[in-house]
Length: 446
Image (tube, rainbow, N blue to C red; front, side, top):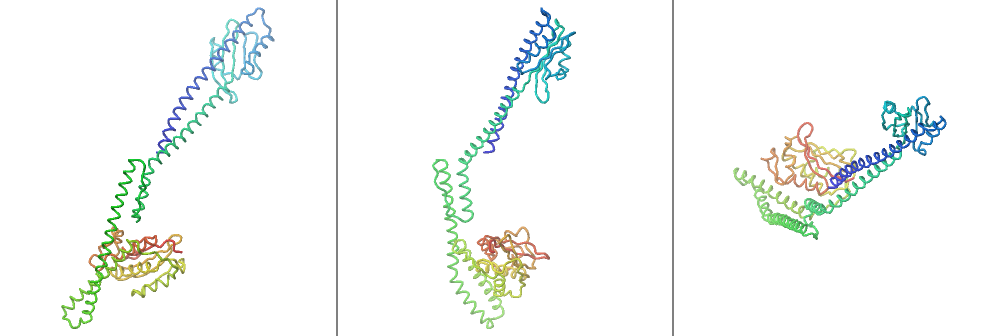
């Protein structure tokens, strides 16, 4: 809107300036031309009367007359008389006059012409005096007229600039006034989208804007209520499932301890039950963790840790002690991260590689950005299709390669949530040589 106001004002101002300048120029030049012509005719009449006498003038008298007709320094006169000679001001020679003008006058007519000498504009008037066999010329500088036109053009240009600036300021002010509520709505919507569900807009005095604010706040209330209800439901369900799952797990473990007393077919059925109970227990634990994250009840506790020691300890704790671990030399020995969240991220990536890719082939920590690090877990599995690389970090999402494998579908979702809590992100890319490389960034830890 500011640009539109400015361009509109600029175009209108320039058009008006061009028209104004054209009218002023035509008027000033016409008026100046009329004055010069009238004065030249008057001077030519005086010269004619002097030349025709009586008495017959001498050359000295003619020269004195011509010099007196230089209009008090404003112009220069030149007189050519047959059989007598040429008379002119020494400062403005005959050669300075336009040849076309003198040719026209010598043929018996009168003429005017604009020309320049040493960059100074002049207007010349030539008048034929046949009765005296003479030709009279007069050249008058137009510097004053050109100066006036330059001042007018400068004033018009300044006016156009001021008008454009004023229109731009008016457009900016108007756009700010009109778009401020929309900007506030966009800001509030962005805060809600980033997790601030309690964000609301302040009341507006304008009736139309007040309706917009009320509708937006009502929508935000409904969204917050629904999210809280769903989060509370998931949390309540997870908590309620803990007790029966714990009892069921204990019973299954007892049966598994006495599996030798069961027939072979019963042992096979017991293996299925044990696997599903453990999977169900892990899913409930993951849901509880996600519920705490959604509710914002988990705090970010950063502390300085030895990154190599931490990665090694986590790998050994979860049964991956043989997996190669590489720490880039550019990564400092100690970094500031949340140890528990980092452990959940690395453990889930290692478990994911074991469940779906035959196990991790390497764990690497490398620099990321100016003050961050990136954790990478490589595997030699089938890889992840490009169309599934963003979706597998969603809750209960599975890639095509893991569709028929055991798992909760929440491990990578937890990785993404803990990465976001650190201000980073999680993604997957191809590993050189085949397989997948899961990476998580941790900005601002150095």
